[in-house]
Image (cartoon, rainbow, N blue to C red; front, side):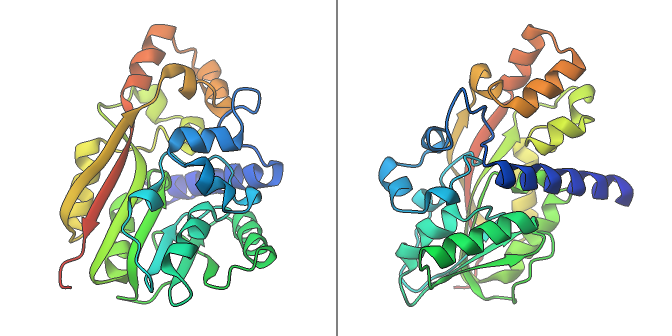
Length: 274
């Protein structure tokens, strides 16, 4: 992928998520499902959502990595693509006063919203930093656990994200991510659509390639903690996808086949040496 093309994708993703936080809408159409309901569909409990600021939940995830991660008191947790802070705030209580949670996001509007949420709700062990997940503003071997929720698929250099993740983890550190992958290649007209990229479809990797990128970064004990598909009705609830489909004139049968190849996986791995 050429540098100009990468920049165009990064700018489009940043613009879309800036618009999301400004307008406070989820990945799903408001008339179909609320931010809260969208998050419940992804695996968050009502109790979890009640325990954090409502403004932190933008309904943008595809899983609940905090629920699957073994977060310990005193851990330093890093969230890649932290958005308005939903997973950081859930992790905050688990790490306790002696722990720390760091959120990284490349969208200034997201970081601003997250910082305001933390300040307004007195989260003393959570901080948010502006940065790209391909170039993490985090020191080497300084993190116990890295989490991410439906963000790495948006990167234009996913292997680099996993290399950076490996770099910042302490020996014995853990990785737990929820993300979108493919069971089969997408048609060219979908892969080449910028609209489809920014909604976590066109940029997704094949599942085998995704897991291989994790392995090549240096991780071991790689496993899939869960996998789920998306009903075509839920996929089509996304207004951006509706617009993209309208532009591409995709037949209903082809749309159903494409939707069936998109899955959410929960991947865990470790950095040896602990």
